[in-house]
Length: 518
Image 1 (tube, one colour):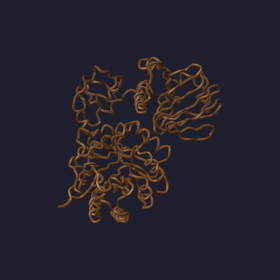
Image 2: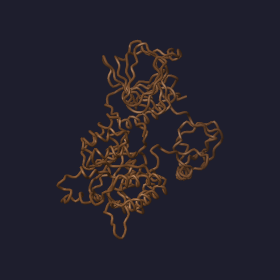
Image 3: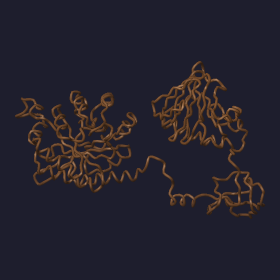
């Protein structure tokens, strides 16, 4: 790859041939063809992975002829030349697979680069082999690192090492037990790694029974975005180990992945399809008249009852509010239709209370905890009815010689242009994206980024995603905001701000006088 940060790890399936080529190019080609066909069938991005060891230097001289290490005879018996691997590598690309290789020594890293592989894999046994890790980091290729047997401090070190060197990399949860029994798969670690390294692609390299497709479905649900397993082909003479998959088993494995993706659905809350809306409505209660109601008459709760079914166009029990006005006569046991009943406007505090539910959800998503002692300022510069378009929620944590606030804006909210005569403030984004304009210069801030706003500096901000950010400033003084829109300056502070203790659960109706949102 010519540039870093271009490789997309999402949805990648790594097929590790390891030594299952048996030292035979012909047999290896059958493996490539078999797994390539499975990848094409399901339209997934696959990578054929090889393993490189320069055996003449990799194995100690005293173990080259005979060794009690069970792996060494296997490596020796399946030795292949570089030209053989080139044939397999070319074949993998011909069937639409990416090429990937695991080096077990530094010389192999150089050969991988010379041959033009797409990706380097760091095996679990090499994850703390720092001479090899450092060499691989210099290759310029994207890396995938397995973490079997590595503790969290070791994974932290790898994450920092690759990040500092500008390496594009993914981390794979792995249990290096061959085969891995179900009770030792530890799939919760996928989620733990996602939370520990946010934004980093997290995958799963697996060694369980290849006939068991339940684990891959669970791994999808836990958030794994790339997957790896050993592959091979059996013949009358060649038998696979207990953790390698045949092409047929790979087919079922990918099919299970696809099924899991469909079952899990999207991360964003989807809109309800009509079939679901119809099903829900068929179970709702509608509003019916308990007594005769005359046109123009206000309707209170005692004059109606709720019952199934809820008919088309009828007010349902969840929509009901006392104070509705009938626009036509309604007989006993008749339905109250939306077209002949005018429901009262929601009270002003309901606009803010509804927004608070979303604000709390954003704070939860951002993992920003609050003390129980704080005050909340709801800024609504053009009135509460327009709060969702123009406004912000400012949570005051500290206001002494220094001040700290947590600011939250919902998707689509903006804060008008203004300056402070006294206050010197710095914003730091914690969650979402903040679009800010300072002295006419616009920028977009992501989590961790900061922006200094000095006294007398015009600034405004808004968000498309929803945002949580900190404001650290000098003491906040009432009346120190001056808006470019002079109509805001002419408003009383209480007209454009509602300030309450905590969230104002019981204060809002009193402070706002229970006036309508309009």
